[in-house]
Image (tube, rainbow, N blue to C red; front, top):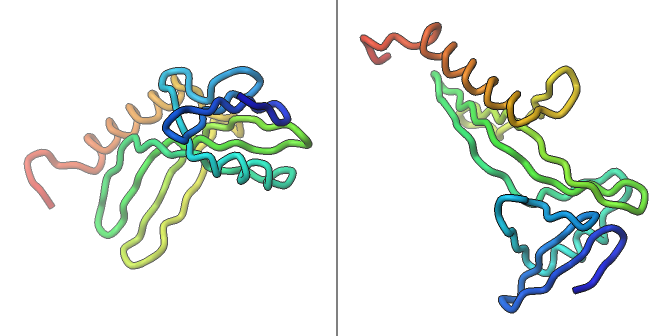
Length: 139
């Protein structure tokens, strides 16, 4: 185990590492392991830069030639000499034949809570079923 700034690195036998920020695991639900190179990538970050650790797909839907996908993105951002975990709810739009574009979805400029995200998903599924889908016909 070693420490730099406010990150604690726990080395595992499988040549991977677990990271704790301010003594807290990045994922409380799953024990996440990373390749050791993540340490050098974090140390190389400049102030204000972020390193995406992983994404978790939630759901997607397609209409015409547009794919709408929603996912969580977990990043570590460097602020001054310390590091902070940031989890964003991301909307990813892919237009056929073009590179995807991503946007962070917020609740009036603030990060969305788990409850905000659940409500957002439920509202969008309901809207899709009532406004954009005819369950008697497939278009």
